[in-house]
Length: 402
Image (cartoon, rainbow, N blue to C red; front, side, top):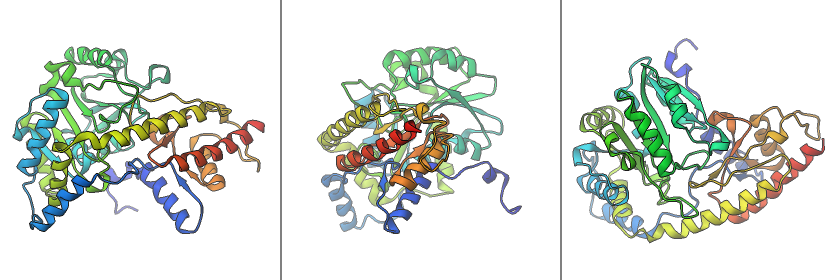
């Protein structure tokens, strides 16, 4: 309708949330649906974190806080980044946001002008391009190759940079592929960025603690310290501490940019929830051993899912370095016909067929900018994964038989 703004016409609803909503709708109707679309840990928030929230309630800590976050949480963020990433920030270089997503959104709104270009490697998290569009920026999508681990190369970065480039986005480990950049790969990208001083980096490290096989995580400014003055580091507690619903993210970067992000936030959500901020202090400052059981379970699930998918006809799957997703290639199923004569032309058709016929919900690769793939979240029980793999195998065998 004409009443809507031009900017909203450019933006698509979140595909991952749409899949989750459809799965819940079918479940409410009594359908047996296994949801492999949700990007959140299936574990409960650790007890000491919930205890901190209860204490906040008991003490009456239920009022507005400073827009940029309580001092205690900002210091916990500073300590975390110093201990884990070897980078030093001051309180005026930290802003606490309503989830990691708002950190990116605030940054885009605060710094992008019409036509500013943001380089986004594909496959990408579904919200990056749309948040850039909402800020009237221009997403520049650079297709990454599975043979290179779905990671942006320095040569691709250089080719994509123009006079209008403002940012490059680096998400490691990645949603949706789970791919993570090595120290050498970050060094190559950082060296390239040093040759283009007008280009800043947005570094999304939300999955940094969920890594496998002894992979060593590094963040960009840790590897190339010269880039710290033009790097925005985004992170949060949602994934590592099973706190998705608590909605606490944060950003670290140059004080003038952080202040601008705070101004945007002051006119939208004002501040993150006071109780959740106290819980986040406990998450970042408390015992980190609570992550280990989750990580052990995630690795076992990853190994199982990768092995199963690679043994199915028409499907191949790379083992990711981190996060809790796999991004299998379904090229061998494209063009095949279902038992009722429907042709599978892309990942959207396959996802719809799996959901309607086998009750398995997953997000098609089109949503992440690269087909023919789909994203499977293994942040669910092994029992669910075993049943889901059986159902996917049925479809793969039916398609390759036709």
